[in-house]
Structures are given as C-alpha cells and as structure tokens.
Length: 233
Length: 316
Image (tube, chains in turn orange, yellow):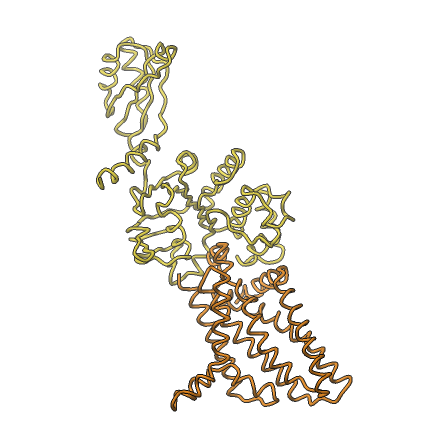
C-alpha cells in the first residue's frame, strides 16, 4: 500500500478539478436547503428525519454521477494502461478511487450539517437521530459508491456505467415491495436486500448492527468485485 | 525477457499465435510489423496489462502473471498514442509517475528534472497535458518511461506524431540508452527500426516470422563493388576468391550519366572478416580498376518483403 497516498492525491485532484463535483454539491445543497426550510416552516419540528429520507433518494441519483468516470474514463482514455503497467496494485487503485469519492460525499454531508446547526441554535432537537441519520447516510453511500465503482470497472462508457448504477440502486430501493409478494423464506431474503429497509432505522434514531453490517458488506463485496474486474484482463 | 509460446485470443479472433523469443540485457530489439499485426497486444502482455491466453512471459526472472508487480518495477512502457492525464500539468504528471515508481522527495524531483531535460520539455512543464501537441504528448510519455531507471523499456511506436527533428532526437536518445537499458521498440516504419535496433523481429498477422531478420546479413556480409571492365571478367575474378558466396550485378539506373559510370556488383561472402583485400587483389591481378568497395548495409526492406510475402503466397 505504498502508493495509496499518491493515488489518492491524484484522485482528489481529478475529482475536485472537474466541474461534476461542484455541480453535484451545489444541486444537492440547493435542493436539501429548500426542502429543509420548507419542512421546518411547515412542521415546526426540530428534526431531520424527512431530510435524511430525501438525502437517501438524492444520493441514489447523484452517486452514479460521481462514480461513472472513476474507471470507465481511465479505460476509455487508455490511462488505465499507464497505471496498470506501473508498479501499483489493483487494490490501491480501487481503494484510492473509493476513498476520494467518499471524501466528496463526506464533504456534502458536512456542509448539510449546517441544517443540524440551525436546529441546535434555534431549537432543542434530539441529537440521537441526527447522529444515527448521518452515520446511516455515510454507510449507505459507501455501499452506493462501491456499486458505482464496480459498474465503472466493467465498461469504458461513462453513460452506461451511470445508468447501470442508477438502475441497480432504484431496483434495490423498491425491491422490498416485491418481497411482500413472495412466500417464506424468499420474502425475508428479498426484503433484506432492500436499501430502504436497512436505512429506515438509522433515519429514525435506531442503529442495528445488522444494518451496519449490511451496508459494510455490500461496500466490501463491491470493492472486491471491482478489484477482480480490474485484475481480469 | 523470455516469451514462450505466447498466444492471445480476443473472443473468437486470434491476435497473437505461438510467439516465442528472448531478449538479452542491453539489446535494442525492434519489433516490425504492419498495422494490426499484433505488436501492441504482445507489448501489453509483456508489461502485464493483458493476460496471455496461453504461454508464459518472464522479465528479469519474474513471471508477468504471478509476479506482476516485480515485472512492472523492472519495465517502463510507452503505449501507442501516448495516453496522459489531461487535467494534470506535465510536471505534476511526471511527479506522479515518479512517485508511483517508488521515487520520493529529492530523488523524484531530480529524476523528473533529468527526464524533462532529456526530452526537452522545459517549455511545457506548467501546461496541462490536455493542451499539448501530439509531439509533446509523445515526449512526455517517453519522459515518464525513463523515470525510475527501468531495466527494460518497451516503446510502442515512440516516434509517431513527431516532426523530423524530434524523430532524430528520440532516435539518438534510444541509442544512448543502449547498454544501460534493454529496449524493445515496435514500429511499422521500416527505416525507423533499421536505424535504431540492433536486432529486428518481424511480426505478421500475430505470427513471429523471425526473431532476427538481420542474422543472415550479419553471418554473410555483403560488399558493394563498383568497377569498370567486362562484366564476365569481373564476375570470374571475384568468384575465384575463396569465401565469396555469390556475385550479382546491381541493375543500373535509367539516367544516361549513371549508365556511363562503372557497373555496380553485390558480393555476398561466406563469413567474416571482410574479404575486401583479397577481392581488390584479385581484380587488380586481372587489370580491373576498382572505383569503390564498401560493406553494404543489410537491406531490411528486401528481407521484410521476402518474409511477409512468403506466408501470403502460401496462404494463396
């Protein structure tokens, strides 16, 4: 892992020198700011539960935009050839791209922390659900970034990578509805694949190890498959 | 470098067929072949970017598949068309490449400076790679390959896109690397390979036709003779010299002034050392004046055409 820091620096530079990062951040903060203000004025409740659910949906739409270029662009421009013939391991490459993307998401979450700050300054919110909501969003986005990275590793076309990620995210969002139609034990199996089923407890202040484990497992599995996809040549 | 029975299939299409060769330390080996003959595929396999469908490749004692990182530490690769990170400035790109090749701090800075000086990149170091001309992109790509002092340099069409001055500069640079580095260079431009390589391999449709196209010329050196006199007498005198394999009259040019010049002959010798003193003595003995007798450079074009036509004819 000698080269991880060098690769991470390169990824951060690439990410923050492209307009996509700023557009995604701006759109995210504008929509969430509007939604937060509206919810606060209508409900008069010092809570971020609604905001967390909206962020959950918004992340499914924006993460593909962040991850689509990660490996697909390198493959298309053939810089992957330069990288993979240099003495760096596939694990270092994948981890650097994953951590760089997560840093953008962490920055978005950090900036959205201003909503929580407003609640603390002008009200008396229950901080538990706020902490758990942010933890849930971070774990949820790690799973999304992992899946987006895998889609980007499998194609040289960024649009295809984005559409595949988006399709998978939307399917896993609503797959629990399909689960209700199935007989036991398939109903539990399919329902437990649902992203919303595992995120909901975080948003309302409950942290279950099973939910933490689910998002971490998905993220790790996706990273492992991305490394395999990169190593398969 | 040792490649043994390397083949590569892309789905149902075979790109490389049973290629085997060795490259000794310090050699400059040229891989010559028409576009689409499989040169880049072979290079990607040698550098560990592609896995061969069958066969093995070892570089500096390491297998490219099982000890990929060790192989990549020993090799530097310049891909065709010089892919670069367009958002990076040239200096930033070279520094990045130096770091991933294990150079840090002052040694990285001095390696970048030396490579930039060798490729004359001083004027573009602060420019984004995406704004560079084709020639400069190629030079930046070669500069990154020099970082880390690799044992083996693999250059895929390194002079494509360069102007004649740059071509000469790159050619001189590659020659200067001889001895210290082993160089494997691919090109479809015959004179390019002829001027740089000490050994030439020829590839056609994924099949290696020869691992040393100039071997025959080296073992049987040719002399070019220009002498005035009856052709039959000249042929007889030269043929009589022990060690002469063949004598052939070279076709005269259509120019009238050229036709008046002494006739030219190509003499193929059995072995080295040169038979020049014996030939001059034999001709002088017959009263034939020698205008010129020099060692003829191997005709790679003829060798290439002979080798590449043979399989085409066989296929027909």
